[in-house]
Length: 635
Ligand code: PRX
Image (cartoon, rainbow, N blue to C red; front, side, top):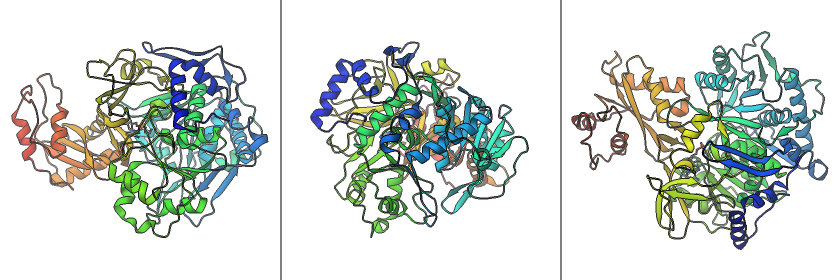
């Protein structure tokens, strides 16, 4: 069993212990899991190269900590509860033993396609049990999984498959999303045309929509698992071998393949899941994220399953058939811990309390949020109307790169404050620095959030680009991991995340690089250049505001252009990146060296053009007035 903290005193005690001797602390946590060979050294690191190795020399397979270690004691307990998109379709539940068999069979299926240790497998799938099975099957044979969120476009999918060099792609015919079906196989076919490395495509039948099977390349999921042996020996892996690549956006350039390795990620997700959510055996835990994001990896699949938990996977969306769907699921499956994003809370709040009427919600013990700052109104609504004033809210701050939660209350233990992530978990040592890199000590300070010591779940590199890894996270502030977030530590030492300080915007909890969106806009034949900024959005947290220079108008006029720009971005990146507002402008505010002054555009997008600060370094100061005057009438 993973160690669990029970009291606030216990938290401070563990924190102190971890601070004075992180190696001993993490060694004790690691001992709760199953290793074939113990480590020679707990950690070997420096943040300059950077080199981060945890549990050096240890051998393991993460699936043995999930299955072999526990099958005799809780093999018949439920591992996964699956709630389909359509509430009238039968929910499925899989015990640990059943899941084990499915994982082994699919692991053998992957082997039959020639997938070996170290090979990359890309997944482009809806939220069905086979997705979790496939991740674990990859881990079983030492293949590196790379899940691509099923809302990304063919182009985004192709870019990721090529970057990862995935030779096998797992997909389903279609994916249900409320009343719609996303044609996943069709999108994947378009993507794979640009991916010469892909040898095989395994297709799950889910929606039964019409698809084309490509001879010699495509094979049905049900055919490939048919007759496979129910046991597949687990590949012996090094603690620092890769477990998965997950793409995320940065402030510049193309998305980065964040790489997580096996040993440290296992220890970190197992420990943080148990402690943040205060999970007890028998509880039903429901995280509404998609496995296409890090939250799904760490807190639908790995963290819960390493704890022998019952983890609920939901295929659908919160508003279908109506905005009471989450609450129906909570009542139907007697959910104890519920974990979602502030965007979902804000959107449900805006639809009114009638969708909560008649829902009992009395099984709930813990509520969680992740992905973006939660405003106080949303926090209170969640606390009062969903949690009925009984359930602590854990506002968990973390990132794709951190692998697991770094700053969060422990449910029911740490006193909470609305919109504060509160205190760091044991083994996590945050520092706040000013723009010159000077540490701001003490309380009541605000600045850039950095972490000064490694934790086991942190990313090890960017796939194929270690220099970019170093430059992005370890050069802004010497000897620190820089998160890209601004933060305030208040008078009680509590942390409040203020949002990104770089050119990343967080739309509905999805992370997007402004440069990425600009590149997509600039592909429009009539566009000269563009600049994208975030602006406050009541539901999404941040909306996407694009300033576009487009000197010649097409026959559709301004309105037609704005629409086609938005559609272009949807097509190139995916609907999540579609700009909310497009303003056609005569030029962009640039310094003499040609750098766009986004600070000015952000102010204009926020509707606060009164105090723009110093604009004297602009090449053309008049452009600011012209942008303000080109009133925004958006489609
Ligand atoms: O800005 C922070 C915000 O989401 C960013 C990380 O995004 P991503 O890698 O997609 O991972 C999201 C899920 C872990 C962070 O840099 N963020 C995440 N959690 C919170 C948050 N902002 C405020 N409060 C949070 N609880």
